[in-house]
Length: 471
Image 1 (cartoon, helix red, strand yellow):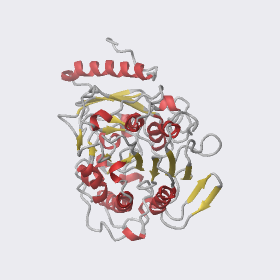
Image 2: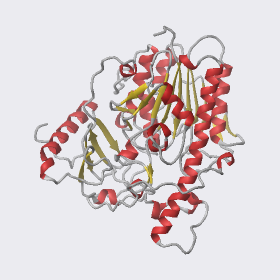
Image 3: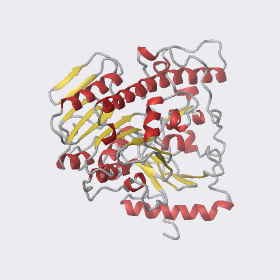
């Protein structure tokens, strides 16, 4: 490996499902420029969010900590931007640093980006067209399409750098987040019927009432603002649901097409400067997303489509092409980046660097990953608060159904409920086997493993959860 420290370019999107990426086998769209990074580097097949929600995931990526440590548990719990991050560690080690695009962790004193030489960010969700940007001098509107503008600002910043110091730039897009407003350049795409996911008609027969309360159904909860035009008046309920799915997917995939084009712009820019081989280039989304899977849109749940994050990474000078099948999480990214840069992580970081996996060196195998969704019964999506533990084969979920008084949560509580899935026998997670006697030993073992992981991470189980017998 070269002794030269890598440049870092992290391109992060919002709500881009792995199953809408060509490299992950998408059957609904193509993403040639994202796929190029996967082909020249590594595709992570089991990268998971630890809280599948925009602001909390971004905080975990930046700080290398879980939500209960970094304080960003919901969409309306802003970050204390003074806390240690991988960016503050890189900057202290001589890196030039920049943050451009969707910050989405609060703004104002104490919440604006810190430890960046340059920052220029959208306010909250931001706009697709003629977006407002905030920098240290204040707010301004930039004409154009957000995905293009964010890339322009990032490449302009890199071009402005003088000297040989390494740099780290975070290029954070709004797309393809709701309300899925495509660029005019991509309005012609995806006019043919888009395939339905196999679980579109999931009847939730074995799921708990906790899962059924979520207001995320394509058929019932997409708004006129989402769809842009009203459905034809003569459709049956089932026909209208299908019409809504295809209308939503058209715009969603058109937004992804803009992202893919702009990923290519970054790659081509780095190659033109002779910096591609020495840059750790990451493309990822802050969480997964339901694309009609189980009849839903949005995320929040611990089910696979929401939990799984696309992550592809290239660094040709040091990383051979391949696929990483081991389980990693968004909490792991900070320590991995720092190890690649030869910079010590902050002691409070809670992840596991996967740099050894990228170097094809022996690495400790992870038994399972811990997940916790805090924003209970929010006004828009009504998703239940829950936590769980996923191993290579099994997934245990505890819906504790309590907002704990956190901002952004509803005031109602509901009885706690459990779900258990055998991902080998049931990869689509259609059959909750929690009550089945054949899974009793596995179920109790997972409860113990989750309890122990909560203790290791310093997260407190909900008072309603009994302590496992063998904990």
